Length: 167
Image (cartoon, rainbow, N blue to C red):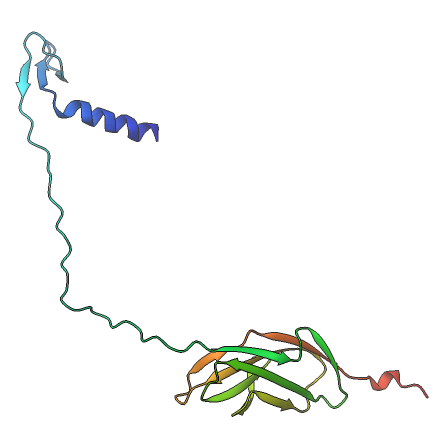
């Protein structure tokens, strides 16, 4: 920081000064900004400068602005986040809501895999194994593009163990 400031001050101080060339008795050449006996003024070329050009303005934009789309908001109503579901058959009901109402199909994603596609955001799963699972509901347009997606939600499926039977 100090060096750049020092160089800037030096450049400003030298800009308007006259430079002199002195050849000493031993043949060495010395340049100075002070006139001394035997000094010859040195003509310096003018500093290289150029003017910046304003950027060209195109008559029409190169890209078309995106059309304002509908922003859908999907939220999973059931099961609650980190809810424990107790079901020995592995049955899980998933319910979601969307605002505003969308046209398209709804996909249920369980642990990163699409497991069901329906016209409504109500799903009934069968045979889900015990343990932790992550779900997400997506709205898919006619072209197959995902238009909206709910935040991921985790639930736990608890099943009674055959090892803990009393009897």
